[in-house]
Image 1 (cartoon, one colour):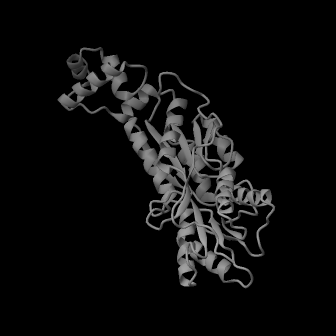
Image 2 (cartoon, one colour):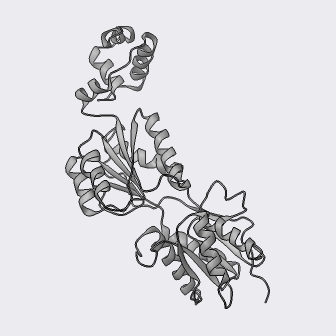
Image 3 (cartoon, one colour):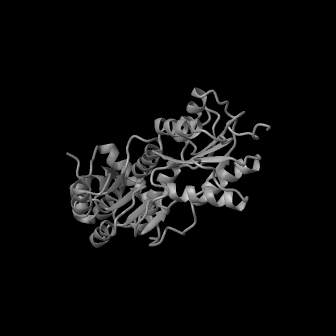
Length: 341
């Protein structure tokens, strides 16, 4: 069986250098690391993760906390995180947490704080004060992608600006009766992602001297079925019908387009629709959207974690500059000028 000494002799380095190169602990020149890795591969040496952990104090494992697994946005972020961690030689352990309760408490009190992970990435999770404090006490860096709570670094788009941009696009086309399919609890929780997008919508209307019509703000889950149901409720009520609709997610927007078709309302001739996300189906449906890049956001979250762990040449204790992550308006065929009359 090959040993670390065999790898060191073949690579022409000391056993300590070979160990550092394969474990990721300490600084090793890039050329030396590649030479050691090639030597280990040639003779079939496999480093013991447990032994490396004893030497370095690192597990090369990152805990990832996510509230929903089976949604497009979260899946894309998770894929970006996984690719970046694997590229850096790290593994991940996934924890699906929902509402506050005993199951969620076990994740933060035991699995993350006590189990051997080097850092934690929380995706779209609103952290309670005691949850963030427990991780801080354990000395594990905590990076949040969206969500709320005290963390070492936070990466997020500007959801208020997103809501404003989407609504201003519709205003710029000449629409004055603009409805909003908001995420759940947008009104009750103004600081949440749905709340910020709702606030951007309302502020854009107010700047144009307008206000939403009666019943023109409907809350729903950010899925296609919920978007369809919400849009049926919104578009089917009596009174002047909106000529444009801003949905808080692309999935809701696609659901709204399906609802309009069921009601015999032409998109975009009678109803313009815009969403948020840049969903993989947006182009197929011709959906205008404010696009973000969830996969790239996942990679950036890993970059922040690695910098906090000192994996770069210089450890950066504050990788979050406070600047929002980029978004862009992508105009397609689902939006146009309002119908005459």
